[in-house]
Length: 302
Ligand code: FAD
Image 1: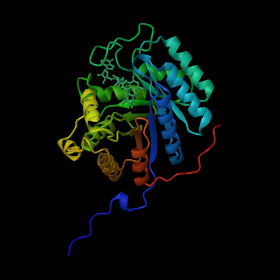
Image 2: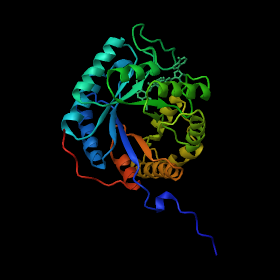
Image 3: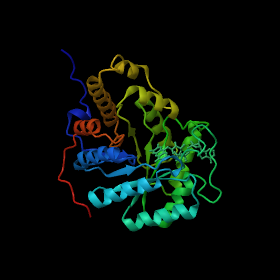
């Protein structure tokens, strides 16, 4: 007779995890339609907040603003606006923050951002701007009592000399007032677990929420991962092998892979997840369903 296997959280009535969704501002009408269809499909899952990215170099400032505004006006969701230090003076950034506060935005994702000269080149802060993410976090908190999220890199940022440097920088962001961190996406949970051990040892106690990227397209995700310094394990490539011309099976495999990842995280005590939706709802909706989340009546806009 076999011993009964240990029950994992997926087999018990575990408390529902906290979730948040990330979107990017649309570039045209067709993309706007896709985005809004996705927002509407995911809204009944009652996320803690939905975040809207800020294009490299501040290139989407108006579009980010318009998307956040529409979320506030047309849904009951709490939008979190991403904001970077790139190509803006402190006065410009503070003005944007005051506008957000006046609109009713209470969540900001505070980032240094990528160099205007492109990823891989040296970051040069605007001489009159915030010089880095810790300073930006402090500036945001000085303007209003925003809930501030910052980035975290379990496999270290490509510019970072070491994980110790990375964790020290996270600590500086926390000391400046950050309320939570959201990680860069990763596929091998081992990186996250090892990183979290070091983060907690460093005395950082804020939630460090794993960022989950469902693999909508393996080739694209793998190439993006390489740029971000994210490990693409051989087993992951193997699961998508031979499916280049079979989008339907690819979607099923993608859902299975992501569900496996979030279940393992749940089993290891993770209670919050941030999903990089790429403005598409189906995969994320399926994963959330498997996490036990069900549609709730949608709250009207405030
Ligand atoms: P930080 O965590 O502040 O720093 C990143 C790295 O820069 C450090 O690890 C270190 O290597 C180096 N560094 C920082 N300060 C110093 C210092 N004082 N001395 C030496 N080296 C230093 N980008 C966008 O353009 N728009 C977005 O909306 C956006 N959203 C994101 C959301 C999340 C959850 C994540 C994880 C990333 C996001 N990014 C976004 C990408 C991010 O802007 C880039 O990775 C950028 O290069 C770093 O910004 P950061 O705030 O993560 O930087």
